Image 1 (cartoon, helix red, strand yellow):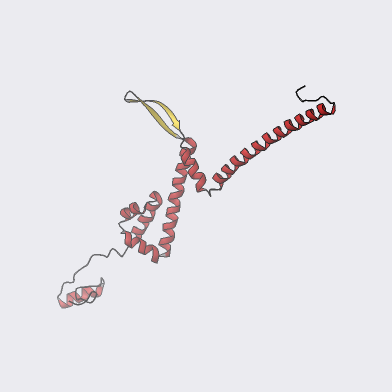
Image 2 (tube, helix red, strand yellow):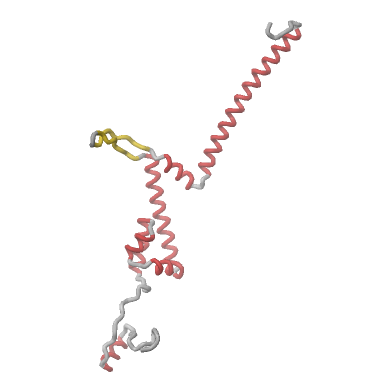
Length: 187
């Protein structure tokens, strides 16, 4: 026995090994396939599961690939890395679509009554709508808050204009009374 990779029991899997065993009378030891040798089928399973769940741990379990091997493969295989990113993007798009449907159409819920489900109502999860607006650049939310601020600013400007008009009318009335020599404004 020698150092790793040089021992007599490490065997290649080809016809030479079989011939050697037959000629020498020794029985070669067959090792299991290393987990490092990830098959294309495992890669495909991983990518499909990731696209469906957007969960790396679940995709690893489904494909039989270990965590460290998957991330190593992601670093060394650009096609696998690209497929990984595309699968996550697909899963996130599906999740976003589902959340959008819930935000728009709401969740139907039933009111429990005396141990049974009673009337149904639709609940609209506003937090999902806010999340989706933020997700799409945040500009929509920021614009909404700016629009709220602009709306408030415009409202204040209108009020200021109304007060200005009233004050000018009152000043004109007081000046008219003063020109007539009428004295106090209360007359």
